[in-house]
Amino acid sequence: MKRINTFEQYEREYNRSVLAPEEFWAEQAEQFTWKKKWDKVLDWNFDEPQINWFVNGKLNITENALDRHLASIGNQTAILWEPNNPNEQAREISYNELHLEVCKFANVLKNNGAKKGDRICIYLPMVPELAIAMLACARIGAVHSVVFGGFSFKSLTDRITDSECSMVITSDGGFRGTKDIPLKSVVDEALESCPSVNKVVVLQRTGEHIVMQPNRDVWWHDEIKIVSGDCPAETMDAEDILFILYTSGSTGKPKGVVHTTAGYMIYTDYTFRNVFQYNEGDVFWCTADVGWITGHSYLVYGPLLAGATTLMFEGIPTYPDAGRFWSVIDKHKVNIFYTAPTAIRSLQALGLAFVTPYKLDSLRVLGSVGEPINEEAWHWYDENIGKKNCPIVDTYWQTETGGIMISPLAGITKTKPGYATFPLPGIQPVLVDEKGNELQGNDVEGRLCIKFPWPGIIRTTYGNHQRAKETYFNHYKGYYFTGDGCKRDHEGYYRITGRVDDVLKVSGHLLGTAEIENAINEHKDIVESAVVGFPHDIKGYGIYAFVICDHERNDTDNLKKEIVETVTKFMGPIAKPDKIQIVKGLPKTRSGKIMRRILRKIAENDLSNIGDTSTLLDPAVVDEIKAGAII
Ligand code: WTA
Image (spheres, protein in one colour):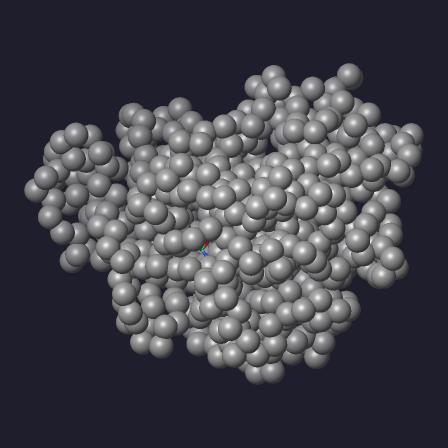
């Protein structure tokens, strides 16, 4: 398949995508299998918002990710699976086998009552069955909603109830490093308050004892034995929902980001091939968990649509030791490696002794995603992993954008450490000031918006269109607002400076401060809390919680431990606060709003820049908090 090969060609394609976007994307769409061609390429209005790509086109994404490849590369490995324990056998699943497994599991779903349009929650560890379950949903037109295994029962309940899932696909547990994660028991607890769910399909992975609820729970391995391997792909409209993926927002309730079929398919395939400069036969490894958008777009859909071999790793970078990533690269001769700055920084901190034993000579391209990459980590990655021989693509995008938006094309775009460089074809970025005035020219800094739809853009937030409108399309009229700050330097290079709203990037995970506060407030002694981020060497941002206790407790160390346990139980270990300060009051305005700006300055130890506190109800609380700050 064609891809951009030179920077001049990139510039030509970019200009074409701006001048004639419909023609540009129709050309990409032609390369896929359609059951019926579209009538119109694009219908859109950002005010509603209403965005329809490939109007009235009919297709099924699995025919494009699987069936389309069988004649040419049916025997090639589609999913290469590396287990948590390096002594366990790796698995190689060819396109032929994957196709068969997906069809079989799609029949399991049907046998258990699933049908087109149903929402199905997937809560699985990083095993090939996770991808099989997603594709099986897509095969029959059910909407998958994958929930990251690092979330615990309350987060799972909220996500299942919001989209009224009728089924959950889970496993007894999962392996991560030395830990066994008990997924099924979390599901059992979550389902106590999810009346919409009537079936649970359980994969056996760890073999630990679990309780199967009669009439509700069935085993994957029993069900798969009694189905045929033939499952015609459901006919889907281009704009039928492919999946929902929850992401955190500035309220406590996560948003169900909706992606639809054709646009997402075309955009993930296009960006995968061009950004990473994928060559036929390359082994591609994206280390993200499939529970996040990066795993959806560049572990499952993008690579499979392009007919690549995608590596899925069950474990963690430090097990059995901090050389695991590098050993897996040598073992499977990985050509393209895509990971997060937080992983790079944590491995960098553990020292080069874990890197030097490995050759890493199969590597051709390196990628980074999820948060700004600091220059030091960029250089470490470049020198020690890429041996100064592999271009680094610093890819900027979001759950809501479906695929990569601003990024170098590997080996084609001249990179600058810390810069995501230039927009991909189809992406028209604008920087605005706080009032929404467009900042023209170079050497400007503002808020990042996009002014024209691309095929992978969010269509709505599930069950609440108004929320999508207010969050993304109302801030600056006529633009999609990313929520990120951004700088365009004197050469037109883009650098993302971080979030400008109340969400935090902690170890690459997007977490809402309000959601963490809700979890903290579940502790019986806590009456109120406020969470802000503070710069953290490894995680990017750490979590700083200010909490008010309803009575004096002398055992503050115990109290802090209990708070951490509460957050782990209700939201998940990824949201554990790094610092907890017990305070008597929070800085509030007379109308009762918490002035987070002040708390952020205290958490950042930037005490001289706290600014005006005279509008506070009780300015004295600031001095008290400053005096007790944990630096
Ligand atoms: C941040 C992850 C700087 C950004 C794909 C964005 C980045 C948020 C980069 C979305 C990057 C992602 N440089 N910042 N290369 N990539 N971000 O939805 O703040 O989990 O808004 O999607 O991550 O996070 P999400």
